[in-house]
Image (tube, rainbow, N blue to C red; front, top):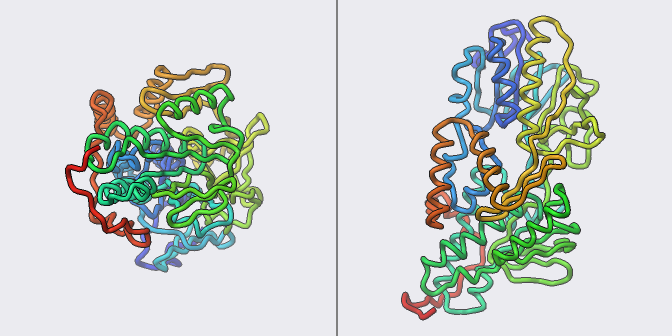
Length: 450
């Protein structure tokens, strides 16, 4: 262990003999810190954001159904009752597994006895990083706000022009990737345009917006059964979403998307097609897969580095069935709880670390208003009952009673009225106008016949 007096004097350092540093305040990192805190063991949690984000509902922030504060909670508030847990705001720049130190972006250095890396994943554009600005993905609150602003601004621009072709382009939205995020974005954007914005505009006709879901594989929701996939496709098509399968994207420009040899003018492209583990994983010198996930053993320990653990989306964990565990919130949460408990026993009693066993709570995706798919083994649901199950599960997993109450009330209000209360384009979002093709200068009159 690095002696306390060997560290920079301005750096906060835990004073007990064994120190665990957790990098990442997502589901996995929060649960590790919580379990070690319950055991009274010193742990330092480090994150570059001061909040824990409930990512499964982030798409609802992006589509104006919820506000950012509905799906985020300050990390310090979550962990404040555990006196042995210290929370630091900072970003890791370098990991030295030999010296057991972390170099932060501000130049300070942290020492550790045990390192838990739970840094999650970021977007993968499959070698086309130039698409990142043209097709934003959805992983953070700034991502969600950017998407929401771009979507709303597209309709605002459409209202300003009297050119029918330009209006059609501006109100054409393409979502790349037919997994749960892509399906949920497509369904929610279709409802936003057809059931909410349609009543707010005079010249543009948001109900005529073209929403395209483009999937390179043979079907959407590939992690679900074919029956669930077919159901989701039919439901999306009933909402007016055009679903394209087996159509890989070839190019994305500022105002067009090209897939399967055809080029379509678009006002907005959203990316939901691929993820890659945090670049920090590459500094461990461990075996990784093509997506940058670190191969870990049954205790979630990095092979060859006994005091380093990787959890959640950053880890490649092979289950008992020989399959890699999916990148789901419930996987990360269970891994964090397990490692926190078994590491606490290991530190206090010298007990060996126990293998992790994942217990699936089911796989679910919402398709649209009162419509979803839910599967757990042989148990499969679709439709309204699956939607209720989805809502109950997600409300239960939200951190903090006030979030559960607020989200439940907003969902009920939205269900009864079709309204969405988070349709404000704030000053911080104005930068999304830069670099985009401006609307034509012709401005429609307020009472243009529809």
